[in-house]
Amino acid sequence: MENYFKELDFSRYSSIKIGPKAEVLVINEIGEYKDYQIMGRCNNTLVGPDHPKFAILGEEFDYIKQVGDLLYVGCATTSGKLLTYTRNNDIADLEFLAKLPGNMGGLVKMNAGLKSWEVFNYVHSIKTKDGYIKKEDVEYSYRHTKLEEIVYEVVFNISYGFSKDKLKEFNKMRDNQPHVPSAGSCFINPKDDYAGRLIEAIGLKGFEKGNMSFSKQHANFLVNNGDGTYEDAVYLINLAKSKIKEQFNIDIKEEVIIY
Image (cartoon, rainbow, N blue to C red; front, side):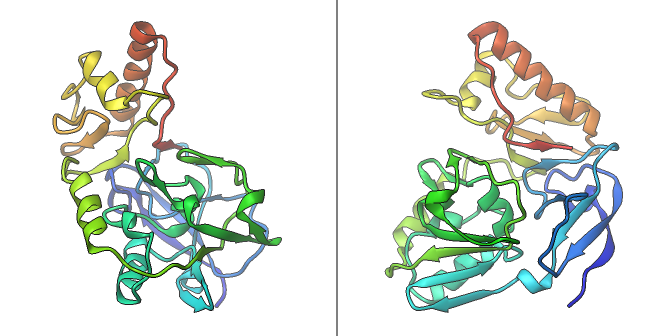
């Protein structure tokens, strides 16, 4: 299948329901795309009016293949589809993908997860335009990788024994999260602390600017209560950063990606 362009309306496509309409390149061929910013399902992303040229992975990279003790997953595959596959095939260790929305490409790029369970714990290798790269040769840490290239495929080590108990536990962890449009966790937890605690301590839990606010339910979620705007979202993010720096001398980093 060839590459093609399609229009995306980020006010509908993104999980926070903010953003303009844009022509996006759909990539179905492995290659060099330096002029484009690759994105996934836009679950941890805030898109403004002056965004770069975007590309997403297309149908050619939506697959799951099991070969021996390795699981090959195209990076356009959703976390939900992979979770269902592991449940149906009694594969262990990826139960934490429950309620962790996104395409596998995005989840790999940010080493997504829940608390200490994260994608790179179970990765064998990844595939870029230059071929396969072993996990040991990738620089990664909590909610972060230094991957600059587009990741087309992720390969997981397989161990068996899907755990329904773990699945329940992970689902429960997500029960305290708001059920309104958001971009997921707004800030990365600093060492030995929690972003939600810091936002609450500076008095911004539930604080509103226009139709945007830090959730009353979970302070580290920036939520869109209606027709929230990019400008109001960025205002709240910057306000929290400055107050946390002033009160705790912590340079807190965004988990949400801003374009």
